[in-house]
Image (cartoon, rainbow, N blue to C red; front, side):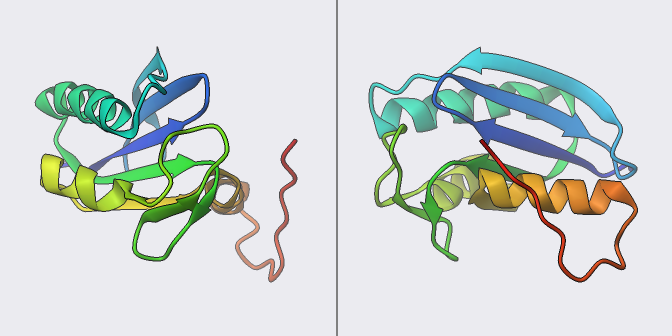
Length: 131
């Protein structure tokens, strides 16, 4: 079967979800307002939306990006606009969905995506600026 991945960009105002195939073609996208009332509510919101998506698409992996300091184990160490300080977002989503999940800082994820999509894989020092 075709391997599809679910990308999630969690922001202070909106959460964007996208299903992509191995060539990077977008198969599905969805956006909703971010429930910042508590970490539990936001995790539940993300999990519920992901469950709906995984019922429609055979997702092989999930990648999440959000602002803040992200530890290597997927725990959010510090954040200014979301209620995730000290929360293991990656572990929670992986347990709930049963799908391998990774989490990275949104600027790092954007830089990596641009690097892969640019065709300049030979570059040794790609850069991306965020505002």
